[in-house]
Image (tube, rainbow, N blue to C red):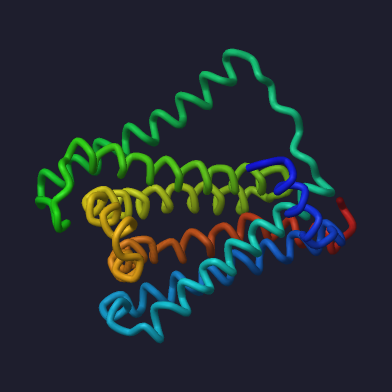
Length: 236
C-alpha cells in the first residue's frame, strides 16, 4: 500500500481519546465478534439456507474486527509496544513458533483429508489442502497469541490463564477450519474468479467451522478485563 493511501487512512481514523476508551472499544469488538460467532454456532445447521440470517452475521463480523482494530490502535497510542530485540535468538524463536503452527496445521489437515476424503467439488489434492490448512492454523495462532501477549502486562493470574485458554481453544477451532478451507481450496479459488455470489455461499461451512471461537472471545474478554479496571482505578 502506498504511503499516500496510508496517510489518507490515518487522516480519516478517529483521534485517540484515552486508554480506557481504547480498551472499551476493544472489548466491544470482542463482544460483537463473540456474539456473532455464538449466533452462527446456534444456527449452524441452517445458516447458509437463510440469507436474512447469514449475510447480517457477515456484516457484524466486519464490524467486530473494525472495533478491535480501532481499540488496539487507541490502546497503543497510550501504551506503545516496547521495542523488541531483533537478535538472532529472538528471530529464531518467532520463526520456530510460526513453523510449529504451520507444520502442525498442515499435518492435521493432511491426516483429516486422507481419513475422510475430500468433500470439495472439484476435490482439492492433499498436497494443496495440507499447506492451506496450515496457513489457517498459523493465522489463528498468531492472532490470538498476539492478543494474549497484549493483555499479559496488565492482567491478573486468572486473566493470564484466560488468555492461554483462549489461545489453546483457538488452535482447536483453527484445526477444524483449516481442514474445511484446505479441502475446499480449489472450489473457493474457482468461485473467486468466476462467481462471487456462489463464493459467499460456499464460505458458509467455513463460517460454521469457525463459530466455536465464541468461547475464545469470551476468554479474551476475561484476559483484557483487568486492563479496563486498571484504567478505572487510575493505575495506568
